[in-house]
Image 1 (cartoon, rainbow over the protein chains, first blue to last red):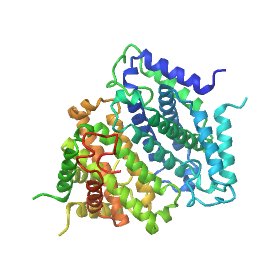
Image 2: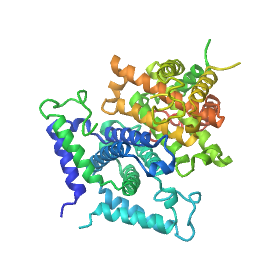
Image 3: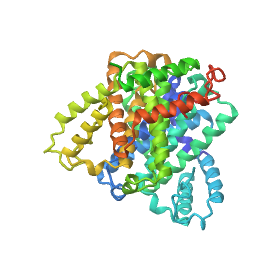
Length: 118
Length: 118
Length: 118
Length: 118
Protein backbone atom coordinates (compact mmCIF):
# COMPACT_ATOMS: atom_id res chain seq x y z
CA UNK A 1 0.00 0.00 0.00
CA UNK A 2 1.23 3.46 -0.83
CA UNK A 3 1.42 5.77 2.17
CA UNK A 4 0.62 9.47 2.17
CA UNK A 5 4.32 10.31 2.51
CA UNK A 6 5.13 8.20 -0.55
CA UNK A 7 2.36 9.89 -2.51
CA UNK A 8 3.69 13.32 -1.58
CA UNK A 9 7.23 12.23 -2.56
CA UNK A 10 5.96 11.09 -5.92
CA UNK A 11 4.13 14.32 -6.53
CA UNK A 12 7.21 16.36 -5.66
CA UNK A 13 9.25 14.18 -8.01
CA UNK A 14 6.79 14.85 -10.85
CA UNK A 15 6.75 18.55 -10.06
CA UNK A 16 10.55 18.76 -10.32
CA UNK A 17 10.71 16.60 -13.43
CA UNK A 18 8.07 18.62 -15.30
CA UNK A 19 10.14 21.79 -14.78
CA UNK A 20 13.52 20.12 -15.37
CA UNK A 21 14.48 21.15 -11.86
CA UNK A 22 15.94 17.76 -10.93
CA UNK A 23 19.36 19.17 -11.80
CA UNK A 24 19.05 21.57 -8.83
CA UNK A 25 17.74 18.92 -6.45
CA UNK A 26 20.97 17.45 -5.15
CA UNK A 27 20.91 16.35 -1.51
CA UNK A 28 23.32 19.18 -0.73
CA UNK A 29 21.05 21.81 -2.26
CA UNK A 30 17.91 20.36 -0.71
CA UNK A 31 19.50 20.31 2.73
CA UNK A 32 20.20 24.03 2.24
CA UNK A 33 16.64 24.69 1.11
CA UNK A 34 15.40 22.84 4.18
CA UNK A 35 17.65 25.00 6.39
CA UNK A 36 16.30 28.12 4.73
CA UNK A 37 12.70 27.13 5.38
CA UNK A 38 13.40 26.12 8.98
CA UNK A 39 15.01 29.54 9.41
CA UNK A 40 11.73 31.13 8.33
CA UNK A 41 9.81 28.91 10.74
CA UNK A 42 12.08 29.80 13.66
CA UNK A 43 11.72 33.49 12.79
CA UNK A 44 7.96 33.21 13.34
CA UNK A 45 8.57 32.29 16.98
CA UNK A 46 11.61 34.39 17.80
CA UNK A 47 9.99 37.24 19.73
CA UNK A 48 7.18 35.21 21.28
CA UNK A 49 7.30 33.92 24.83
CA UNK A 50 6.99 30.13 25.10
CA UNK A 51 3.37 30.63 26.23
CA UNK A 52 2.57 32.95 23.33
CA UNK A 53 3.99 30.33 20.97
CA UNK A 54 1.26 27.96 22.18
CA UNK A 55 -1.49 30.40 21.32
CA UNK A 56 -0.80 31.85 17.89
CA UNK A 57 -3.26 34.31 16.45
CA UNK A 58 -4.82 33.44 13.12
CA UNK A 59 -2.35 35.34 10.95
CA UNK A 60 0.69 33.86 12.70
CA UNK A 61 -0.87 30.41 12.58
CA UNK A 62 -1.34 30.72 8.82
CA UNK A 63 2.29 31.72 8.32
CA UNK A 64 3.53 28.91 10.57
CA UNK A 65 1.37 26.36 8.74
CA UNK A 66 2.78 27.58 5.45
CA UNK A 67 6.37 27.26 6.71
CA UNK A 68 5.63 23.77 8.06
CA UNK A 69 4.38 22.85 4.59
CA UNK A 70 7.61 24.09 3.00
CA UNK A 71 9.76 22.24 5.54
CA UNK A 72 7.77 19.06 4.94
CA UNK A 73 8.07 19.35 1.18
CA UNK A 74 11.86 19.74 1.21
CA UNK A 75 12.31 17.07 3.86
CA UNK A 76 10.23 14.53 1.92
CA UNK A 77 11.96 15.43 -1.34
CA UNK A 78 15.41 15.06 0.23
CA UNK A 79 14.54 11.72 1.82
CA UNK A 80 13.10 10.52 -1.49
CA UNK A 81 16.36 11.30 -3.28
CA UNK A 82 18.35 9.44 -0.63
CA UNK A 83 15.85 6.60 -0.50
CA UNK A 84 15.25 7.03 3.23
CA UNK A 85 11.89 6.12 4.75
CA UNK A 86 11.43 9.05 7.15
CA UNK A 87 8.74 7.47 9.28
CA UNK A 88 10.62 4.22 9.65
CA UNK A 89 13.85 6.07 10.49
CA UNK A 90 12.06 8.24 13.08
CA UNK A 91 10.40 5.20 14.65
CA UNK A 92 13.74 3.40 14.87
CA UNK A 93 15.35 6.40 16.54
CA UNK A 94 12.46 6.75 18.94
CA UNK A 95 12.78 3.11 19.94
CA UNK A 96 16.43 3.74 20.77
CA UNK A 97 15.49 6.78 22.84
CA UNK A 98 12.71 4.97 24.66
CA UNK A 99 15.38 2.58 25.89
CA UNK A 100 18.05 5.18 26.47
CA UNK A 101 15.97 7.64 28.44
CA UNK A 102 14.29 5.58 31.11
CA UNK A 103 11.01 7.30 31.87
CA UNK A 104 11.52 7.18 35.66
CA UNK A 105 15.12 8.28 35.61
CA UNK A 106 14.64 11.23 33.29
CA UNK A 107 11.27 12.43 34.51
CA UNK A 108 10.89 16.20 34.39
CA UNK A 109 14.46 17.01 33.53
CA UNK A 110 15.60 18.63 30.30
CA UNK A 111 19.09 18.94 31.73
CA UNK A 112 19.84 15.26 31.98
CA UNK A 113 18.95 14.60 28.41
CA UNK A 114 17.69 16.31 25.28
CA UNK A 115 14.02 15.30 24.94
CA UNK A 116 12.77 13.28 21.95
CA UNK A 117 15.97 12.57 20.14
CA UNK A 118 19.59 13.51 20.42
CA UNK B 1 -7.98 5.42 9.33
CA UNK B 2 -4.91 6.43 11.26
CA UNK B 3 -1.97 7.35 9.05
CA UNK B 4 1.67 6.60 9.76
CA UNK B 5 2.33 10.25 10.54
CA UNK B 6 -0.49 10.28 13.09
CA UNK B 7 0.85 7.11 14.69
CA UNK B 8 4.32 8.65 14.98
CA UNK B 9 2.81 11.82 16.46
CA UNK B 10 0.97 9.77 19.04
CA UNK B 11 4.09 7.83 19.97
CA UNK B 12 6.07 11.05 20.39
CA UNK B 13 3.28 12.43 22.55
CA UNK B 14 3.40 9.36 24.78
CA UNK B 15 7.18 9.52 24.95
CA UNK B 16 7.09 13.13 26.15
CA UNK B 17 4.25 12.52 28.58
CA UNK B 18 5.92 9.50 30.19
CA UNK B 19 8.98 11.64 31.00
CA UNK B 20 7.02 14.75 31.95
CA UNK B 21 8.79 16.58 29.14
CA UNK B 22 5.63 18.20 27.78
CA UNK B 23 6.58 21.30 29.76
CA UNK B 24 9.63 21.74 27.48
CA UNK B 25 7.71 21.06 24.28
CA UNK B 26 6.41 24.50 23.48
CA UNK B 27 6.21 25.34 19.76
CA UNK B 28 8.98 27.88 20.30
CA UNK B 29 11.32 25.30 21.84
CA UNK B 30 10.48 22.62 19.30
CA UNK B 31 11.15 25.02 16.42
CA UNK B 32 14.59 25.59 17.97
CA UNK B 33 15.18 21.86 18.35
CA UNK B 34 14.21 21.41 14.71
CA UNK B 35 16.67 24.13 13.69
CA UNK B 36 19.40 22.43 15.70
CA UNK B 37 18.81 19.09 14.00
CA UNK B 38 18.65 20.67 10.54
CA UNK B 39 21.96 22.32 11.35
CA UNK B 40 23.46 18.88 11.99
CA UNK B 41 21.99 17.62 8.71
CA UNK B 42 23.42 20.53 6.73
CA UNK B 43 26.81 19.97 8.36
CA UNK B 44 26.91 16.47 6.89
CA UNK B 45 26.83 17.97 3.40
CA UNK B 46 28.89 21.11 3.87
CA UNK B 47 32.20 20.01 2.36
CA UNK B 48 30.78 17.67 -0.27
CA UNK B 49 30.36 18.66 -3.89
CA UNK B 50 26.77 18.42 -5.16
CA UNK B 51 27.76 15.19 -6.94
CA UNK B 52 29.36 13.70 -3.85
CA UNK B 53 26.17 14.49 -1.95
CA UNK B 54 24.32 12.15 -4.32
CA UNK B 55 26.65 9.26 -3.56
CA UNK B 56 27.21 9.10 0.19
CA UNK B 57 29.40 6.37 1.57
CA UNK B 58 27.85 4.01 4.09
CA UNK B 59 29.03 5.87 7.19
CA UNK B 60 27.83 9.25 5.91
CA UNK B 61 24.54 7.73 4.81
CA UNK B 62 23.99 6.32 8.29
CA UNK B 63 24.60 9.72 9.89
CA UNK B 64 22.34 11.48 7.38
CA UNK B 65 19.56 8.95 7.94
CA UNK B 66 19.88 9.49 11.68
CA UNK B 67 19.64 13.27 11.27
CA UNK B 68 16.63 12.91 8.96
CA UNK B 69 15.00 10.83 11.70
CA UNK B 70 15.61 13.57 14.26
CA UNK B 71 14.30 16.28 11.95
CA UNK B 72 11.19 14.22 11.25
CA UNK B 73 10.56 13.57 14.93
CA UNK B 74 10.70 17.24 15.89
CA UNK B 75 8.72 18.33 12.85
CA UNK B 76 5.92 15.84 13.55
CA UNK B 77 5.93 16.71 17.25
CA UNK B 78 5.71 20.44 16.51
CA UNK B 79 2.92 19.98 13.98
CA UNK B 80 1.04 17.78 16.44
CA UNK B 81 1.17 20.49 19.10
CA UNK B 82 -0.12 23.07 16.63
CA UNK B 83 -2.70 20.67 15.21
CA UNK B 84 -1.36 21.01 11.68
CA UNK B 85 -1.65 18.12 9.22
CA UNK B 86 1.77 18.28 7.58
CA UNK B 87 0.92 16.19 4.54
CA UNK B 88 -2.26 18.10 3.84
CA UNK B 89 -0.46 21.43 4.28
CA UNK B 90 2.37 20.35 1.95
CA UNK B 91 -0.09 19.14 -0.67
CA UNK B 92 -2.01 22.41 -0.53
CA UNK B 93 1.22 24.39 -0.97
CA UNK B 94 2.31 22.17 -3.82
CA UNK B 95 -1.00 22.73 -5.59
CA UNK B 96 -0.41 26.48 -5.34
CA UNK B 97 3.07 26.08 -6.75
CA UNK B 98 1.94 23.83 -9.57
CA UNK B 99 -0.26 26.73 -10.68
CA UNK B 100 2.23 29.46 -9.95
CA UNK B 101 5.21 27.94 -11.69
CA UNK B 102 3.96 26.97 -15.10
CA UNK B 103 6.02 23.98 -16.18
CA UNK B 104 6.76 25.39 -19.64
CA UNK B 105 7.60 28.88 -18.47
CA UNK B 106 9.93 27.85 -15.68
CA UNK B 107 11.59 24.89 -17.33
CA UNK B 108 15.24 24.47 -16.37
CA UNK B 109 15.60 27.73 -14.52
CA UNK B 110 16.33 28.03 -10.82
CA UNK B 111 16.77 31.75 -11.22
CA UNK B 112 13.22 32.61 -12.18
CA UNK B 113 11.76 30.89 -9.19
CA UNK B 114 12.72 28.89 -6.14
CA UNK B 115 11.88 25.26 -6.97
CA UNK B 116 9.31 23.27 -4.96
CA UNK B 117 7.98 25.92 -2.66
CA UNK B 118 8.76 29.48 -1.81
CA UNK C 1 45.03 50.65 10.21
CA UNK C 2 44.20 46.99 10.34
CA UNK C 3 41.18 46.18 12.47
CA UNK C 4 40.75 43.11 14.65
CA UNK C 5 38.22 41.67 12.19
CA UNK C 6 40.69 42.06 9.34
CA UNK C 7 43.42 40.40 11.40
CA UNK C 8 41.14 37.45 12.16
CA UNK C 9 40.20 37.18 8.47
CA UNK C 10 43.84 37.08 7.53
CA UNK C 11 44.61 34.41 10.09
CA UNK C 12 41.72 32.26 8.84
CA UNK C 13 42.96 32.72 5.28
CA UNK C 14 46.44 31.52 6.28
CA UNK C 15 44.97 28.60 8.19
CA UNK C 16 43.02 27.42 5.16
CA UNK C 17 45.90 27.99 2.76
CA UNK C 18 48.40 26.05 4.88
CA UNK C 19 46.11 23.00 4.77
CA UNK C 20 45.07 23.45 1.13
CA UNK C 21 41.48 23.78 2.33
CA UNK C 22 40.72 26.81 0.16
CA UNK C 23 39.16 24.42 -2.35
CA UNK C 24 36.42 23.63 0.20
CA UNK C 25 35.86 27.25 1.16
CA UNK C 26 33.37 28.33 -1.45
CA UNK C 27 30.76 30.83 -0.26
CA UNK C 28 28.12 28.11 -0.68
CA UNK C 29 30.00 25.70 1.57
CA UNK C 30 30.87 28.33 4.16
CA UNK C 31 27.24 29.44 4.37
CA UNK C 32 26.38 25.82 5.14
CA UNK C 33 29.12 25.58 7.76
CA UNK C 34 27.80 28.77 9.33
CA UNK C 35 24.28 27.29 9.41
CA UNK C 36 25.62 24.16 11.06
CA UNK C 37 27.35 26.14 13.80
CA UNK C 38 24.34 28.36 14.39
CA UNK C 39 22.30 25.16 14.74
CA UNK C 40 24.62 24.07 17.53
CA UNK C 41 24.30 27.48 19.18
CA UNK C 42 20.50 27.38 19.03
CA UNK C 43 20.52 23.87 20.48
CA UNK C 44 22.25 25.21 23.60
CA UNK C 45 19.24 27.39 24.31
CA UNK C 46 16.38 25.19 23.13
CA UNK C 47 15.10 23.87 26.45
CA UNK C 48 15.90 26.94 28.52
CA UNK C 49 13.31 29.53 29.44
CA UNK C 50 14.15 33.04 28.23
CA UNK C 51 15.16 33.91 31.81
CA UNK C 52 17.38 30.86 32.15
CA UNK C 53 19.07 31.84 28.91
CA UNK C 54 20.18 35.07 30.61
CA UNK C 55 21.85 33.20 33.45
CA UNK C 56 23.84 30.32 31.99
CA UNK C 57 25.80 28.12 34.34
CA UNK C 58 29.52 27.86 33.78
CA UNK C 59 29.44 24.71 31.66
CA UNK C 60 26.68 26.04 29.39
CA UNK C 61 28.44 29.39 29.12
CA UNK C 62 31.63 27.66 27.99
CA UNK C 63 29.77 25.74 25.30
CA UNK C 64 27.94 28.86 24.11
CA UNK C 65 31.19 30.83 23.96
CA UNK C 66 32.75 28.06 21.92
CA UNK C 67 29.81 28.04 19.48
CA UNK C 68 29.95 31.83 19.19
CA UNK C 69 33.63 31.48 18.30
CA UNK C 70 32.79 28.98 15.54
CA UNK C 71 30.01 31.16 14.17
CA UNK C 72 32.32 34.18 14.16
CA UNK C 73 35.10 32.26 12.40
CA UNK C 74 32.86 31.07 9.56
CA UNK C 75 31.11 34.43 9.24
CA UNK C 76 34.40 36.33 8.99
CA UNK C 77 35.83 33.77 6.57
CA UNK C 78 32.74 33.95 4.34
CA UNK C 79 32.73 37.75 4.35
CA UNK C 80 36.45 37.77 3.53
CA UNK C 81 35.87 35.57 0.48
CA UNK C 82 33.09 37.86 -0.71
CA UNK C 83 35.05 40.99 0.15
CA UNK C 84 32.31 42.31 2.43
CA UNK C 85 33.19 44.51 5.40
CA UNK C 86 30.86 43.05 8.03
CA UNK C 87 31.02 45.95 10.46
CA UNK C 88 30.44 48.54 7.75
CA UNK C 89 27.54 46.51 6.33
CA UNK C 90 25.97 46.11 9.79
CA UNK C 91 26.35 49.81 10.53
CA UNK C 92 24.73 50.73 7.21
CA UNK C 93 21.81 48.41 7.92
CA UNK C 94 21.44 49.77 11.42
CA UNK C 95 21.31 53.32 10.09
CA UNK C 96 18.45 52.28 7.80
CA UNK C 97 16.64 50.70 10.72
CA UNK C 98 17.17 53.68 12.99
CA UNK C 99 15.27 55.70 10.40
CA UNK C 100 12.68 53.07 9.61
CA UNK C 101 11.71 52.19 13.15
CA UNK C 102 11.01 55.50 14.80
CA UNK C 103 11.84 55.04 18.46
CA UNK C 104 8.58 56.62 19.67
CA UNK C 105 6.33 54.82 17.23
CA UNK C 106 7.75 51.36 17.83
CA UNK C 107 8.40 51.59 21.53
CA UNK C 108 7.83 48.30 23.35
CA UNK C 109 6.32 46.44 20.43
CA UNK C 110 7.87 43.39 18.82
CA UNK C 111 4.73 42.89 16.80
CA UNK C 112 4.93 46.03 14.72
CA UNK C 113 8.43 45.31 13.57
CA UNK C 114 11.23 42.82 13.92
CA UNK C 115 13.76 44.41 16.31
CA UNK C 116 17.32 45.21 15.19
CA UNK C 117 17.18 44.35 11.55
CA UNK C 118 14.75 42.79 9.15
CA UNK D 1 40.80 51.62 22.97
CA UNK D 2 37.33 50.85 21.76
CA UNK D 3 37.22 48.44 18.83
CA UNK D 4 34.81 48.58 15.92
CA UNK D 5 32.96 45.52 17.28
CA UNK D 6 32.50 47.21 20.65
CA UNK D 7 31.22 50.35 18.96
CA UNK D 8 28.69 48.33 16.97
CA UNK D 9 27.61 46.49 20.14
CA UNK D 10 27.06 49.82 21.87
CA UNK D 11 25.04 51.19 19.00
CA UNK D 12 22.83 48.08 18.94
CA UNK D 13 22.35 48.41 22.69
CA UNK D 14 21.23 52.02 22.29
CA UNK D 15 18.94 51.07 19.41
CA UNK D 16 17.20 48.42 21.51
CA UNK D 17 16.98 50.63 24.59
CA UNK D 18 15.47 53.57 22.71
CA UNK D 19 12.64 51.33 21.50
CA UNK D 20 12.25 49.43 24.79
CA UNK D 21 13.07 46.25 22.90
CA UNK D 22 15.54 44.97 25.50
CA UNK D 23 12.71 42.85 26.89
CA UNK D 24 12.73 40.82 23.66
CA UNK D 25 16.50 40.51 23.51
CA UNK D 26 17.08 37.46 25.64
CA UNK D 27 19.95 35.21 24.52
CA UNK D 28 17.37 32.56 23.60
CA UNK D 29 15.46 34.93 21.34
CA UNK D 30 18.57 36.40 19.78
CA UNK D 31 19.92 32.94 18.99
CA UNK D 32 16.63 32.30 17.16
CA UNK D 33 16.86 35.60 15.29
CA UNK D 34 20.42 34.70 14.29
CA UNK D 35 19.21 31.31 13.02
CA UNK D 36 16.48 33.01 11.02
CA UNK D 37 18.95 35.38 9.35
CA UNK D 38 21.42 32.60 8.62
CA UNK D 39 18.55 30.70 7.02
CA UNK D 40 18.00 33.65 4.67
CA UNK D 41 21.72 33.73 3.88
CA UNK D 42 21.82 30.01 3.10
CA UNK D 43 18.76 30.39 0.88
CA UNK D 44 20.69 32.84 -1.30
CA UNK D 45 23.17 30.08 -2.14
CA UNK D 46 20.91 27.04 -2.27
CA UNK D 47 20.52 26.61 -6.03
CA UNK D 48 23.93 27.90 -7.02
CA UNK D 49 26.83 25.63 -7.86
CA UNK D 50 29.90 26.13 -5.67
CA UNK D 51 31.53 28.01 -8.57
CA UNK D 52 28.51 30.23 -9.11
CA UNK D 53 28.59 31.07 -5.42
CA UNK D 54 32.06 32.57 -5.94
CA UNK D 55 30.83 34.88 -8.70
CA UNK D 56 27.56 36.44 -7.55
CA UNK D 57 25.87 38.92 -9.84
CA UNK D 58 25.26 42.39 -8.49
CA UNK D 59 21.72 41.78 -7.29
CA UNK D 60 22.63 38.56 -5.48
CA UNK D 61 25.70 40.21 -3.98
CA UNK D 62 23.55 43.02 -2.60
CA UNK D 63 21.16 40.55 -0.98
CA UNK D 64 24.01 38.49 0.47
CA UNK D 65 25.69 41.60 1.87
CA UNK D 66 22.42 42.60 3.48
CA UNK D 67 22.00 39.15 5.06
CA UNK D 68 25.60 39.22 6.29
CA UNK D 69 24.83 42.56 7.93
CA UNK D 70 21.80 41.08 9.71
CA UNK D 71 23.75 38.03 10.87
CA UNK D 72 26.52 40.29 12.18
CA UNK D 73 24.09 42.54 14.01
CA UNK D 74 22.40 39.67 15.85
CA UNK D 75 25.67 37.90 16.57
CA UNK D 76 27.24 41.04 18.05
CA UNK D 77 24.11 41.81 20.04
CA UNK D 78 23.94 38.26 21.44
CA UNK D 79 27.64 38.26 22.37
CA UNK D 80 27.24 41.66 24.02
CA UNK D 81 24.41 40.37 26.22
CA UNK D 82 26.50 37.36 27.24
CA UNK D 83 29.62 39.49 27.66
CA UNK D 84 31.61 37.39 25.19
CA UNK D 85 34.41 38.98 23.16
CA UNK D 86 33.77 37.36 19.77
CA UNK D 87 37.14 38.11 18.24
CA UNK D 88 39.03 36.89 21.28
CA UNK D 89 36.90 33.72 21.42
CA UNK D 90 37.44 33.04 17.71
CA UNK D 91 41.18 33.60 18.01
CA UNK D 92 41.38 31.21 20.96
CA UNK D 93 39.48 28.55 19.04
CA UNK D 94 41.65 29.05 15.99
CA UNK D 95 44.79 28.60 18.10
CA UNK D 96 43.39 25.26 19.30
CA UNK D 97 42.67 24.22 15.73
CA UNK D 98 46.08 25.29 14.46
CA UNK D 99 47.52 22.79 16.93
CA UNK D 100 44.92 20.10 16.41
CA UNK D 101 44.99 20.04 12.64
CA UNK D 102 48.63 19.75 11.73
CA UNK D 103 49.02 21.47 8.37
CA UNK D 104 51.01 18.60 6.85
CA UNK D 105 48.81 15.82 8.15
CA UNK D 106 45.53 17.36 7.08
CA UNK D 107 46.60 18.89 3.80
CA UNK D 108 43.89 18.80 1.14
CA UNK D 109 41.46 16.64 3.04
CA UNK D 110 38.05 17.76 4.20
CA UNK D 111 37.25 14.20 5.23
CA UNK D 112 39.79 13.89 8.00
CA UNK D 113 38.63 17.00 9.71
CA UNK D 114 36.14 19.82 9.45
CA UNK D 115 38.10 22.87 8.24
CA UNK D 116 38.38 26.02 10.35
CA UNK D 117 36.67 24.97 13.53
CA UNK D 118 34.77 22.00 14.83
